[in-house]
Length: 140
Image 1 (cartoon, helix red, strand yellow):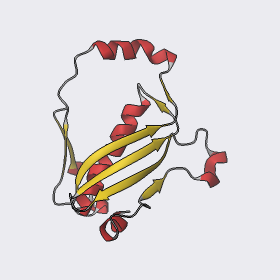
Image 2 (image 1 turned 180 degrees about the vertical axis):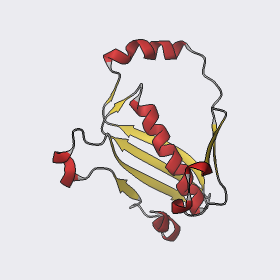
Image 3 (image 1 turned 135 degrees about the vertical axis):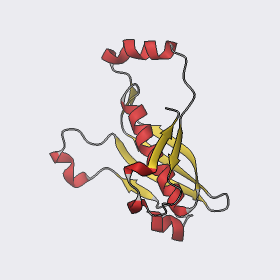
Image 4 (image 1 turned 120 degrees about the vertical axis):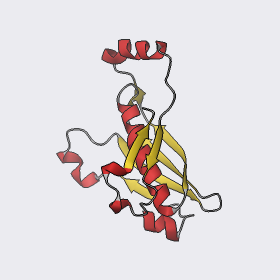
């Protein structure tokens, strides 16, 4: 994907699939996040990522999925010399489980903290070079 973004940033084929049809029968639950697609803007040096999810539990699952895709957006953007831009989600079935309702109501009553900042080791230019110590969440 990184090589394709570098060589052909306007490609409409910057797609990563999490849906392996050949293995669906072996899975207890198929992936909720089905695919993601990168969008590069070489003039503005920005990289965006759109994720399609077939299903999302909005209280626990969706925040985890958002975090899970924010990190690779930032990492890939750094590898191709772009700034991370938009992280967009399209969700087929968004739901709140009944046993999460009380916790969700409590969360809505709370005042949110300031958002943390993701900081990556700026010297890494290849995604395979990255190690966990290269990732820092500041203000969390």
